[in-house]
Length: 419
Image 1: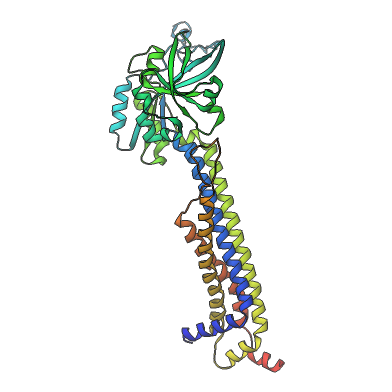
Image 2: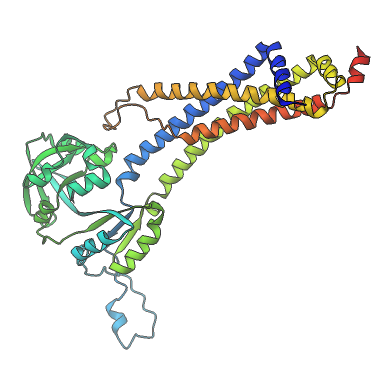
């Protein structure tokens, strides 16, 4: 039977029960709209959290760690060379925390085609002096331009200019929580004392707010030169090298390679943030599960409506088969009805989903903990729309398959004789 005739008959059956058809289409529309909105919001939230944590962490970090010396003096004695030596108080080896030959290491990293950028860092434990009270804190010596380019440092400086760390001698940017403890305003001078009891005066040129309150109560930032001066170290003193790769998935292998090549400890982003990545995956899985459940529920609605339509149109089906329509043709008619509901309901659902997402994207989201976020996060990934369209068609096809199969097996003689 010609396809255009099949389509005309399906259209007539749809319009004959337009209220039921509308209910089924609204069910699909609602499911698709909620699927798009939910996935867009949840994945936008995941990207927000990634921006707060993952994007501010190096893909590979090179550092020197204080650890117990594997070569204790007793092991060097010929007398105990072939014995098992149990040592109760194993001491750490007397090696410095700085990365050896840091200049050559930095040059080698920058030449690696897999590396998109490198940022050296110095971590210094200090005490901030507030009258007679000493507040424990950390000064991170950074290359401001590299940190801003690779890890968005400038976006988290809520007051002052990050570049002032480079241009203003002996300057510091305080975490917002730490500044509140010290009652320090921009332009004030704060006193810090090192572990070697050396005291320095540093000018406050800005505030830093990461969104993590405990971090902001202890962290502060200064230039590499200022931090080296505080610690009384030479200009090549570097405790950490942060590496950002072009391909994040290479991080574990690259970390192992660098550990052997440069004789340092290394840490890759997957190992350091395994729990966080698991949380993001679970949130996405929940979003997809809820969205697909909505589509399946809409499919059951279509199934029920088509079943009712078959019972109400027994006479019409019998007449069609009596006038030469095969069971396959009748099957195609009801499949066409189901797919039409899924297609048009899905198109409208995509439109409403996009509109809802746009409205949410404009809602102000102001919180002191997240100064860089102005509105609720939404992800407009085209993949979500493709998945929604595919599932709407697949779900409605499966919902229409069983009723269509039942209609194709109706015996017109039995129906007419019963009448």
